[in-house]
Structure formats: structure tokens, C-alpha cells
Amino acid sequence: MYPSAYPVWRIAQIAHNFWFMTNRQLTCLASISVVMATGVGAAAPSAGAAIHPVRAGESIQAAVDAARPGDTILVLPGTYQESVLITKRLTLRGMGARTVITPPAAGTGAANACAKAGNGICVMGSAEKRIDGVTVKSLRVSGFGKSGVWASDTDRLRVERVTSENNKIWGIAQQRSTRGVFSDNTARNNGDAGVFIANMIDQEGGATDTLGAVVRNNTLTGNRIGATIRRVRNLTVSDNTLTGNCAGLFVVGDESLPRAGAMTVQGNRVSDNNKFCPATTRLPALQGTGIVLTGAEETLVRSNSITNNVGASPLSGGIVLFQSFVGATNTNNVIRDNVVTGNKSADLANRGTGTGNTFQNNRCAVSEPAGMC
Image (tube, rainbow, N blue to C red; front, side):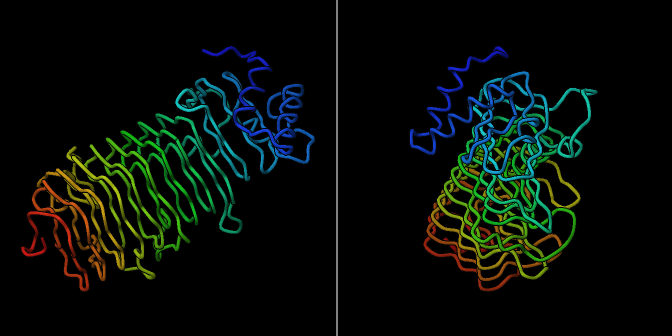
């Protein structure tokens, strides 16, 4: 437990480490003094961005509400029982795993829209105006009824070094958004996907062009699916570790236009995704699935290591091409230069009726149909 009277000198020390000592950053340090004098959440009367420290026992949301666009909310170590709703450009930064956000206790006051939806941290724009340039980093969010981090209608969102665990549906999720970067996060033991990127969850429609979104260097373990990339285009999924899930990675499309795909999946380590998850209304039981493409086009899957994913589901195997649940096929995807070994029932499997899919220079032992290794 950290004392509510966190020393001013310690706040300044943290800020010193956070900002390099340039003229502009000295302005930020001066802003802290104003914030400390006027109360947490008070915006400093400065032309530069302010840092608003929040101590254990204080409200993150109050600081967010009082901040100006471009400010940083620095959440000091402690456990914060609240949901945080962000609707302006700012940085929400914790102090690593020691900064923990958990659901508010029942009956603790009026809930914001984020709490009412069952999410931990929400970054919310609108169809008319996307929220641009929000960063969420270096904290832990745990135990929410829906998602740890949820974003909608954003541009250039960055989620970095966040641990999202034990949430009922998604660890880190985003819809209707562009140019997001999700890097160096840990998503574990979530009820559905650790990372979920989609066009939209509440209606049908063609794939969203993400304009180059990036999912990289994350550790995704113990989830139903490590990462689900659904009905989007033009992004990169690279250098992630996906292990101990029921399935590693799903690239999902359907018959809508534009189709999902036109993305690169490379350099990922996908192993031992052998947890068992029962069937749902949309999917069969999952176990032993590495990477699945279903209803996708023009996706490049290269230079991944996919090993020891073992199961008896129709989706089991190392790299599996499978037509979607509405019958959409995979077309013109390239699977090359992967190490795909020890997977069952096959290392490579083309179980759909799509055309133009090619398998080149993969190191593997068993394929369905035979001859792809």
C-alpha cells in the first residue's frame, strides 16, 4: 500500500526519469508543481503539456476529466478500483505491473459508460470524429466483465507494455479504427481473444482498411484465441509469442466486400496451443490450432515458427486454411518460409475450396492434402 501523501520530491523524481531535461520538458516539471499545489487532476496553466500524478486512493477518471489534450496522466503504484473513460488525446501511463486497475466495488457510485459496458479502460471516439493520438502504457488491468482495454473510432492509438488478464471476453480490443499500434503487451487468461482487432462488432460490413495497424512483440497466453484479426485489411502481425491458448492466431473474413486480408503475418512464435475450448455457435471446439486463415485474401504468412500444436478439431494443425462459417473461401494467400513442425493432425492444411493459395519453401512433415511439404 502506498501512502496517499506521496512526497512531492518523489513525483518530481518520477517526472525527471520520464522526461529528458530539455526546455520543453522543464515546462512539464513546472506543471507538476502546479498540479500538486492545486490538487490532482487540475490542469496546469502552461503552454506545454502537463503531467497529472494520481496516487493510490485517488481517482484516475478525475484526472482524465480535468486534463487538457496532450497531457499525461501518470498513475503511481497501487490498486485502482474503477473504469477509465478517455475521450480526448492524452497519455495514460502507469508504473508497470505495480499500477493495477480492477473493477469498482458494487454500489460505489455512478458508473461511467466504460464501467457500464464492463470494460476496464475505454478509448472512445465517434463515427463523426475519431479520437487521435491516445497512448495507454505500462500498467495492469484485470478482472473485467468484458475487456481490459476497449477502443472504438480511434486513429493512431498506442497500447504498449500493458498486461491485460482474467477478463471475461477480450484482453485488448479495438473496432472501427485505423493506424493502431499494439506492442510489447501481455494478454493472458482472457475468455476470448487476448488481442482482438475488428472492423465492427455490432453489425455486418466490409473489411476496414486499418491504414497500416501493427500488432507486434506481444505475449498472448492462456486465452481462448491468442489474437483474432477479424474483417480488417492492411496491417502487420509480427514477432508475437502465442502459446498455451486453444488457438494461436485467427485471420477471419466473410463474404462482405472489401474482403479481409492484404496483411502480413511474420516472425511469430506459435507453439503448444493445446488448451481445450468447447464449441460455440460460430466455431467448433478448439484445441491444437496454430494459425488459421478463414475467408481471407492476399495475406502473406511467412517466416513464422509454428510448433507442437496438437488437437482433433477441424481447425487443428499448424497453418490451416478453412472456409468461413458462412462459406467464404480463402483466395490468393501465400504461405512461405515457415518452420511448421510437430503439429497434428497436420503441419499444413488446406481444408477449403479457395483458389490461388500457394505454399512455398516451408519446413514441415505432414500436409493435407499431401505434397505441400
